[in-house]
View 1 (cartoon, rainbow, N blue to C red):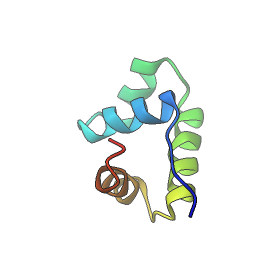
View 2 (cartoon, rainbow, N blue to C red; view 1 turned 90 degrees about the vertical axis):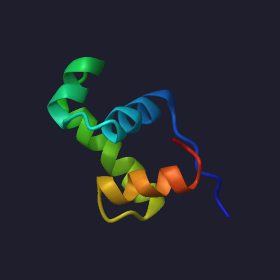
View 3 (cartoon, helix red, strand yellow; view 1 turned 30 degrees about the horizontal axis):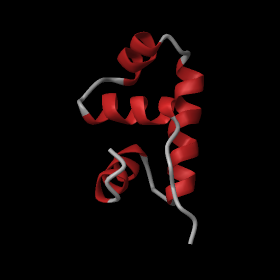
View 4 (cartoon, rainbow, N blue to C red; view 1 turned 180 degrees about the vertical axis):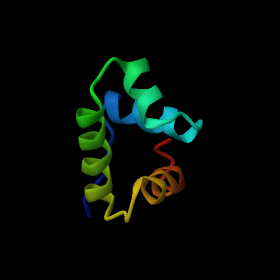
Length: 66
């Protein structure tokens, strides 16, 4: 079984998302483009086999990664 870890950017992105920040707000706050931000979400979703960002966030919380 593969151990899932988040890099600093992934963790910060999902922490802000879990606090209700919009994509545009996260992008602005972290000073990264929305395209890169979408890639961060998609990469984590793929590694978790999540259906979407919300599902990924729930799985991360369940696995005590957030």
